[in-house]
Image 1 (cartoon, rainbow, N blue to C red):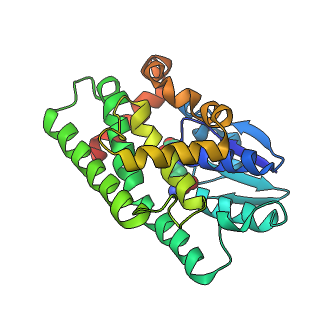
Image 2: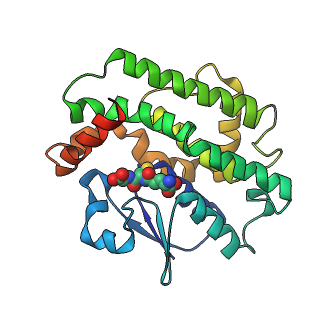
Length: 242
Ligand SMILES: N[C@@H](CCC(=O)N[C@@H](CS)C(=O)NCC(=O)O)C(=O)O
């Protein structure tokens, strides 16, 4: 199995961490988003969506992190403990509920804060307007409130006593604004202890390996300077933050 990844990307980290913690053998194929490798002819042959992660298993190519995670659960069912994606109807539905919710909520809101803090000034050539940053932080706060109050409640993990794909997908998204210097856990003791529990499931070493690049994200604008990718991002940023 080949996994096309860039660990700056949250969905890539979820796929990477899951494969590693379960012990699924794979070849790491780096797609460097900072230099725009997703636009290369070679990657275009792998995925016309031009986003990572992508999984290639023999001649079978799959995009979308949550589809890839579920594929790995089924393909390696003998290795994957049930709690990751429970067979129980309602427990599985809870995981799917979170996976569906997060795309347009925690993911979008955490990503916006991340992009404003890291790339907006270098791409747009100006400081982030205060009202835009305030609005993005407020959206993120609302998503984190929902993660705590609706999904986590007073349970150790989102579906109960054990970790599932939902916790994995949640933590990688929260680490994106954290990497950009916004402490999403501040004033949230419940979320902080949950983070410690989730990290422990993967082991500090593996968790840190996956998050090394995002925790050193301050070097990203410099890496991208004089890079054609910056110009390509400008219209996207104009649309996203108009
Ligand atoms: N819904 C997709 C999202 C994939 C995605 O947005 N990937 C981003 C990195 S986080 C990407 O490859 N962006 C490259 C681009 O937009 O040019 C998933 O869950 O896999």
